[in-house]
Image 1 (cartoon, rainbow, N blue to C red):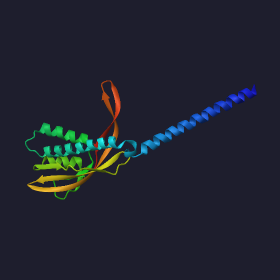
Image 2: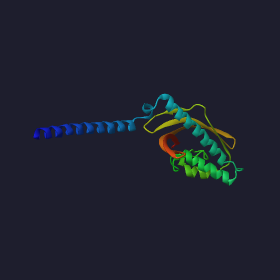
Image 3: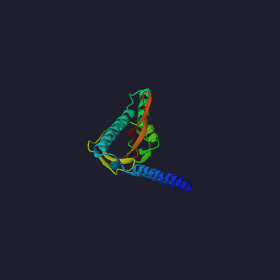
Image 4: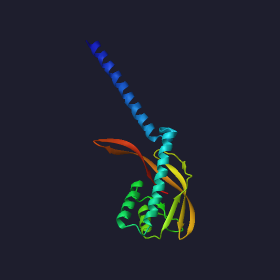
Length: 187
C-alpha cells in the first residue's frame, strides 16, 4: 500500500513539475514577444502598411494645422479640428515644433494649437519622400520635410517625428476586439 501511495505521489509531482516548466516557458515567450521590436513581430509588408498609415496621419495633421490659421473658419469647425488633432496624438502635451515662429522652438501641442488659432494664415505641405527609421518595441521615427509658407516666405523644415504603435480596444457592435493603431508623438 505504501509503495502504491509513494508511486502515485511521485507521479503527481512529476506532472506538477512539468506543468510549472510549461508555465515558465509560456511566460518567458510572452516576455520575449513583448520586448521584441516591431520589425521582428510583423512582416515587412504589415509594418510598412502601418507606417504608410502614419504618413497619412501626418498629412492630415498639417492640413488641420493649416485650417486653424484660416480666419474664415467658424468657431464650431475650429473646435472640431482641435478635437481631431488631439485624437492623432498619444498625449496632448507632446512637444511639437512651433511653426508660427521663425526659431522653430519646441512647445506643447496645446500651446501650439493656441498660437495657430491667433496666427496669420500659414500653408503647409508634407514632402512625398518619407523615411521610417529606428523601429523599436512600440514605435518608430518618421522623417519628412515640411514646406511652410508664411507671409509669402517659403521655408523647408526637416522633421523627425516619433510614431507610437498600440493595441487598443475597439467596439464592433456587441463585441470588443483589440486592434493595432498608430498615434503621433513628439517632433
